[in-house]
Length: 211
Image (cartoon, rainbow, N blue to C red; front, side, top):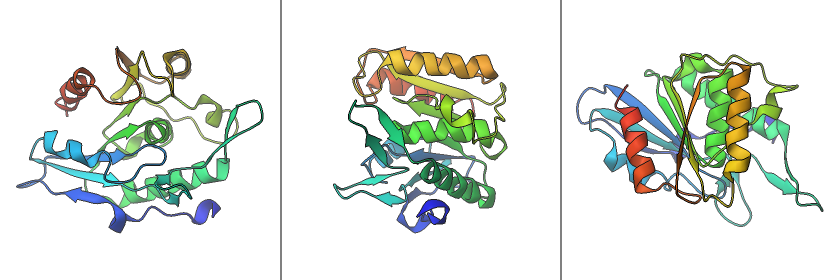
């Protein structure tokens, strides 16, 4: 599919603000999940915010959707298809350019990795970025993506110290490297696995209250 892949807004979940929207939050789900996964958190978002939960564009044969496919070689090393990454980033940026309200992006796992990349390539299109149980894909910027990160963009990374999927030994150094390159990512660590624990959500809610 390459760059022809598109994110279909008709497949997203949407909750409109009860009155005039003061702000807007977009969820990006993780690998092999769907638009329903994070939408349950919408009830915890203030009623004067719009909330949209997007569905990734690539259906998986095992069920669910992905922002880009994952492949593992014989040594267990994970590989991604760069064209699929750029396609999802381009499609997301196009939607943001057309949106009347500049939203805050919150991504989980693979959705958080994409959100991190979006924040460093198109910071002008969002108010802030939160990535949960994710890492910063520094290698994407080594050859293909233009680095445009802004230290004044609110950017939160929530890390689980017991995450067995994306362990802190992988995520924390990736954020340190991104900050050394000029990003302004605030890293908060919690005793949790690959998920969103209550205390980590409280931290996210406090962060969101600044918008």
